[in-house]
Each structure stands twice: as structure tokens, then as C-alpha cells.
Image (cartoon, rainbow, N blue to C red; front, side, top):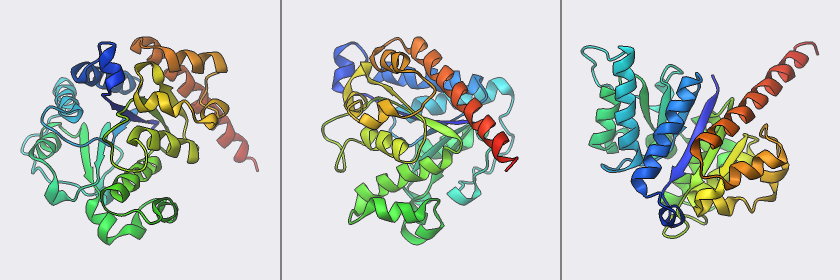
Length: 268
């Protein structure tokens, strides 16, 4: 199943053109709905706040489960670690905390979403079982001397890169001040997507860190299924529906390329 990593967050630039936090949350939900309808999985790396985007995602997941009749009776509410997740959940949210630090909202989401949304806490693994993580060697190289919260967030983002197999990353907005680390989180996620060879789609029309990521020369030179004109249109548009159609076309092209590549290699 193709996975779509959604990296979307409010920023001052978006607010100035009329997209406040509530509007950005609606965009995230629309993206999730769109890609679920195309039989894809969506992955988030967002923190949980009572009024944050994951609260909106959790409400959406519960509604999806209810419509599908998939809410299970008598759920024991067991909280999974990263080692016991399976490909069945259509939405994943990876958080850097341990199980014991999951917020009440995250626990409720795991319990009430009928298996549609799974919250994966990897904090304990980062502390005690680092070598078990996918891309552990590359993780050490990328982290370097970093420690604490900065290292946790970078590790989480690289872990998600391993889940996008196959998959892609979409970036929209992202704050450019008050961030934790050497660069805005959305920019780091875009940079890692390019480094790990994941198709990247930048929606720079809403400003913020995603627009800054447009300075990455590699973005304009690497393959994501869109031609130069389409990439430029996606980067400038604030029409979410048009952006989703462009991204979908790019994904289909990438999936086709992957299929033919695997077909050719089977004859080696």
C-alpha cells in the first residue's frame, strides 16, 4: 500500500492570506480523506494538543470507523509500540514519547477509532533499543552530536521515512520561528525525503517553511511524477483540490515507474 506522509502545520504566512489554524486543520482532514479514498495510507508525525490537528484527525478517524461499521465492541484499549503495529490501520501517527507519556487525547484516539488510526509511541525504543529502528545506521549519522528533544524529533522523522516504503511526503506551511532544532521541522522533513529518495511535493503557496524548502535545488531536479510546469503550479497554488489532483497524478506516475522497475528486475 502506498503511504503518504503529511507534513502540514499553521504558519504566519498562511494566516495572513486567511488560513488560520482551523482552516489548516481542515486542509489536513481533506488530504486524509482524499488519499484514503484512493486506497492509500496516511502518516503523521504531529504532537497531540486538545485543539491541535491530531484532535481533528482523531475525530475524522472515528467518523470513518463508524461509517465503515468497524468500531469493535469491548476493545481493551491496548496501546501498541512500534514493533506491534501492522499495515491494517489506514492512518498512523508516530510520536517520539513513550507509551506512559501519551496524552489522554491520544489514548482515546487509539481506543475509539476502531483501528482506523493507530498511535505509535517510539520514545522507549529511541532510548533503549535504538539499533532496532529501521535506518539505525543512517540515524546515527544524521543525529551526530544532537541530543534531547532535537534528536528525538530527527529520529522520529527518519523513522517515518522508513514507513514511506513505498510512499511520498507532502509539505505545506510550517512555522519559521520558534522551532526546535537547527531548522524548521517541515524543512527537515522535506530535506530527509530528498535524501532518502521519497517523492516530495511542496505546496509553497501557503508560505512558511514549505516555501523556504523550495530553495532546495534538488527538489526541482528530482523525480516526483510531475513535470517542471506542474511542479511550479503545485508550489504556487492555494487551491487545495487542484493541488491534490496534481499530487495524485504525480503519485500514479511514480507508482507506475516502480511497477515497471520491479517487473524489469524480476528478469535479471
